[in-house]
Length: 152
Image (cartoon, rainbow, N blue to C red; front, side):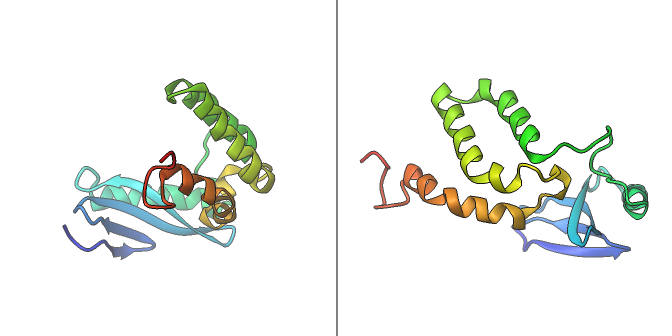
């Protein structure tokens, strides 16, 4: 295990060293005044020269005030994107009740705050208030209260 760290390679490009030793290229940039990190794949599969080319390819749309994260037309807002994620994951979840609970929590806590925001504009600071509202139920379900299972 190593200490996680970022090594600058110039012009916002960094080599990210994770605690498990994995290496990946990251482009740090600013979009609409918000700090963004664009993952450019792992090292050594992607060389420094390739990472610089990919970083340049992502900087150009940002400089032209376009969104590099979505290449197929208009960016969806959070609400329809959340609906799509729910529909795609529903068959994988352990029960209909779990899927319904997931959607109810999202509809109660996240959609009122994030529903109309384009997904490429949502970041961790936007999600924090939503997670704080739903946290007590989640902690109880995971058994964080009383040191045991929520059903004990």
